[in-house]
Picture 1 (cartoon, rainbow, N blue to C red):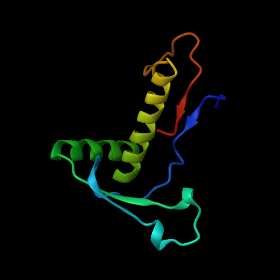
Picture 2: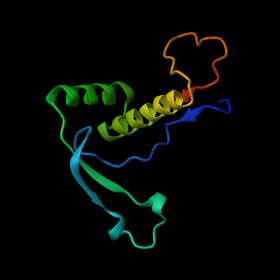
Picture 3: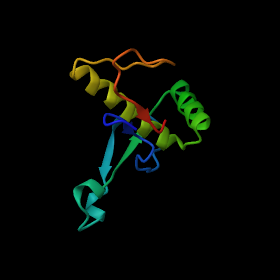
Picture 4: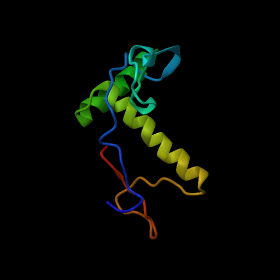
Length: 108
C-alpha cells in the first residue's frame, strides 16, 4: 500500500437500523464513563426508502458485510471523494489508473 492509500477494511462495526441519517441520534458516551472520545459511539436511527434499503442489502451481500459495515464504508468512501475534491483532485474508478495517480482505496 502506498503512502496515500486509505484502508477502510478496519472501519469499526456498530449495528445501524437502516440507512442514511435523519433526525434521531442519541449519544452513548454518557453510558461509557472514562472512555476516550474516539472510543465513544453515537447510535443513529435511520429512515430510508425501500429502494435504498435494497441497495444497502445488495452491497452488503456482495461484499460479505453487514448493512452497518456497508454504510460505514460508503461514508468513508464519500469522505475520500470530498477530501480529494477539496484538494483539487478527482476520484477515479476504473481498471487502469490515469498516469500520475497516487491514491488507492483498500478494503472495499
